[in-house]
Length: 388
Image (cartoon, rainbow, N blue to C red):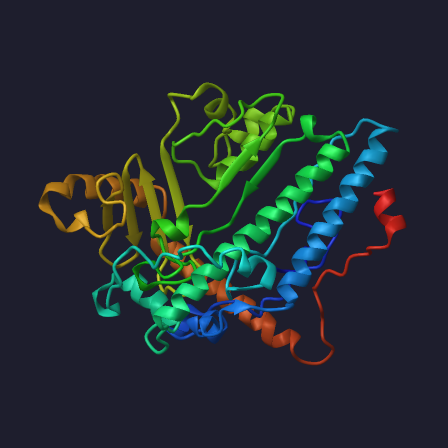
C-alpha cells in the first residue's frame, strides 16, 4: 500500500488484487467495531464456484511467473546473471470457495470438525473478544454443515496452491534451472478455520501463527530434512543474503532482527536462539499486541491487559492459561521484562493511532477532486518481458 509500488524490485509482472490506496486503514480511535469486509458472513456460502477475481488473479500470477522463468532461461544463455522472483498467490484464503475440480478431490474424504473447544466470547481474553467482534462471530452463527463445507473448500484451496507450486517447479526443471535455484514456499499467516470458534487470522493461537516454510536448494540442503526449532519470517532476508553471498552481509544482518537459517538447515545449529517475536498492530484489536515464543512456551503480551502463557508441549491446544498460576509468576515476569525492555508499548500505541489518522486523512483528501490512483498497472507485453 502507498505510492511506492516496487518495494525494491526492478519490475512487477502483475497488478495487485487489493487497492494500493490507504482505504483499508483500520481506526483504533473508533474502538471495537464489526468489519463487514472481513466478517464470517462471507463464509455462509462455501463450496464450488466456477470463477472469481481471486482465481483469475492467481492464474495470472502463475502464467507471468512461467513466462519470466522462460525469459531467464533465454537470458542465461547470453549472460550469467542471478534473479530473485517472488510469485505471491492469494490462495488458500477466505472466502472458502474453489472450483469443482478441487472440491471433488475431497468428496470421499472425512472432513474433521475443529478439534479445539469453542469458547464463549465472554470467556475469551479481551484481545480475542475484540477480534471475534471484528469478525462478526457474535452476530453470525455458522451451522455444522457450513463449518464442514468451509473446511473442505479450504483443503481444496491448499491443493490448488500446491498445484501452482508444482507447475513452477516443473518449469524450472524443464528450463534446466532447478539445481541452481533456491526455492522457498511460505505464507504470511495461518488460518483458524473454526478452531476455538475463531476464523481467519489476527490472533496468536497456533493455527493462525504457524505457517508453512519449505526450502529447497539441491546444491546445499539435504533432501527431506525437517527442522523443529522456532523460526520466523524475519529470518528469511538474512537467509537470502547468506545464500546469495551478498558482500559484507554479516554487517547488515547484525542490524536486523532475523538470523540466517542456513546453519540451522545444514548443521542443526545448537546455538540457535529458539525465540520468535510476533507483533500485531492491525485491524481488530485496540491495543498493540506482541507474542513471544521461547522454547515450549508461548507468551502473549497485550498492552494494558493481562498476559497469557501456554506450554505448547503439554497443552498444544492452548486451553490452560498458566499466567494465572502463582507457580509461573517468575516466568511471566521474565517474559514481560523481555518485551517491555525492547518495546515502548505506549509510544507504539501513540505512533499507530497517529499513523492511522494521517492515512485516513489522505484517504479522505484523495477522494476529493481529481482522483489519484496508486494501483500498479504492469506492462505485460511479451516483448517487454523478454527485455527485462
